[in-house]
Length: 259
Image (cartoon, rainbow, N blue to C red; front, side, top):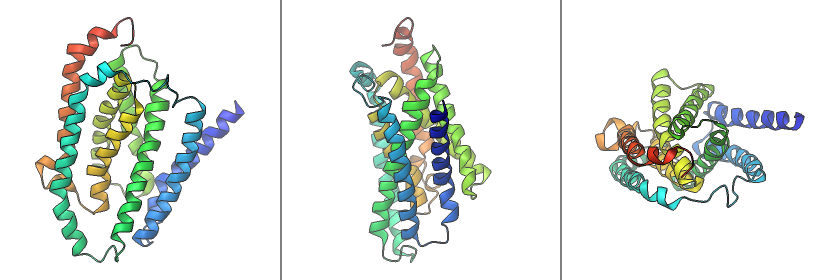
C-alpha cells in the first residue's frame, strides 16, 4: 500500500512539473524552451512506460487487435487521414510566411521543429498510456458506449490542469476541453472495440501534429481562418459515424459478451 501511494505521489509530482513547466520557461529562448520541455517529458515517459510495462499493458493478450471491429472503424481512420492532409496543406503556406517574416526562431527553425515533433510524440505516448491503458481499464461499467463516454470525459476534465501553466483563458480552456472530449470518444472507441492502443497512439499523434501543437508551434489560431481546417468539425464527423455504427452494429453485439 505504501509503495502504491509513493508511486502515485511521484507520478503526480512529475505530471505537475510537466504542466507547470511552460509557465516557468517563457523567458528562455525558443530552442532552450523546447529542450527543457523535451527533457521533462522524456523523464515522465520513462516513468509511465516502466510501470505500464511492468503491469503487462503491452503484453500480447492486452493488445490483441480485433480486426473485424477495426474494419468497421475504418472510415474513422480515413476521415482522420483526410483531415490531417487538408490541415497541413491549408496551414503550411501561412506557417511558412510567418516563419519567413519573423526573427522568432533565430535560424534554429529546423532544430526547433524536430524537437517539437519529439515532444509531441512523447506527450501522445504518455497520455495514451495514462488514459487508454490505465484509467480506461479501471472504468467498471457494463455498457461499453457509456465506458467510452466516461473515459472521454475524464480525458477532457484533465485539461483543467492547463490552468497550472498560468496563461490559459476560460475560452481557450473550454475549446480545449471540447476538442479533448470529442477526440477522447474516438480514441476510447478504438481502444474498446479495436483493442489496440497502438492505433490510438497513431490517431492521437496525427491529430496533435496537424492541429493542436501545430498551431501553438507557429503561433496561429489555425481553425479561425479556414472552415476546412476546423478540428471540431472533423471530430464531429467522426463522432457522428461512431454513433451510427454503434446503434447499427456494436450495440447488437454488446450484450452478454465482448466482441
